[in-house]
Length: 255
View (cartoon, rainbow, N blue to C red):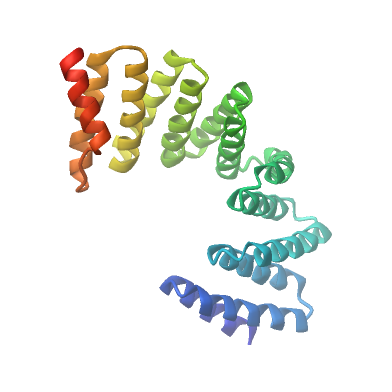
């Protein structure tokens, strides 16, 4: 019966029916407990936790992940433990408790490095960089972002490179390191163009316009906003009134 429940759960998830998926995973968990099958129970609990997290039932998701972690520690599956630790960290980020996420992330990092799981390391290092940046720990944030970039390159994660360059650029900007910020943001823009992700490019262009205006480089700010206009049009949007006012002002004063 457990396999039937799991099959139904996956179908419900594919259809976006999270409530029914949760009920099916709960039935699978009950069956795996009755069968005294720790490996299958761990898998079902993990999926139940993921589904509860999507439903914003973070308390239940945390309970599931903690039980999964207990099973995995008994079986000493380091790779699985690391991923569950990341899930627990992500839950705390989702509930605006970043200070509680950090210990889980750091333990996961220690486990993943010897395993050379660069896909997971890239995401995890990026998350750590984001948390350090939120606390204005600029040097620590940059160090984590650089680690993330290195891991993204190893596995060829273009999405990861684009997003990490973008956040690293913002971090440099907020730290007042404008030359490095510009370099990172231009790299991010190139990756978003390569990926065909105009929304990502638009966010970077708006930040570049802020940077150039801060540098009193009106011409470059104008060019960024003009490019932003074109990119927004490509997915059916237009400049905000604030950006339009800014563009008109820059053209009058510095164009």
